Image 1 (spheres, helix red, strand yellow):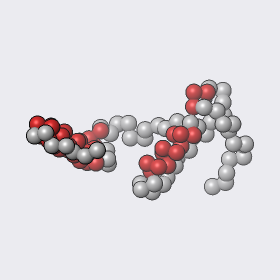
Image 2 (cartoon, helix red, strand yellow):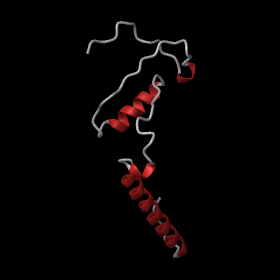
Image 3 (spheres, helix red, strand yellow):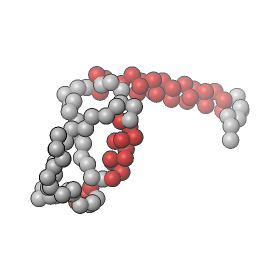
Image 4 (tube, one colour):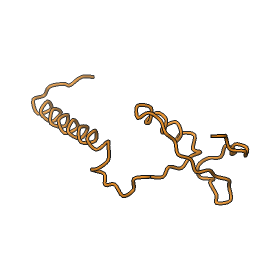
Amino acid sequence: LAPPSRAPPPLFPMGSLFRSEDMLLVRLYFESVAAPATVDELGRLGLVQFSDLNAATTAFQRRFAADVKRCEELQRQLRYLSATSSTLHISAGP
């Protein structure tokens, strides 16, 4: 693909995206390992707006649902250990 023929957009904060500003609709593809860091960096730049291409998919059908469940289970276990250690007056670190 050839790069767009127009000049790059000026650097404005995300809140200044008006209807009259030039915009491009692009689809980005990158490795799933790089996705969190890439999306984080793009978000910090404040020059992008994301749109969910899987809006009809429920939260439980998404690829990361198993990871969220695993994190919730770990949080539950940590709460239990914290409550038990405070009941037994055991210090859990600094």
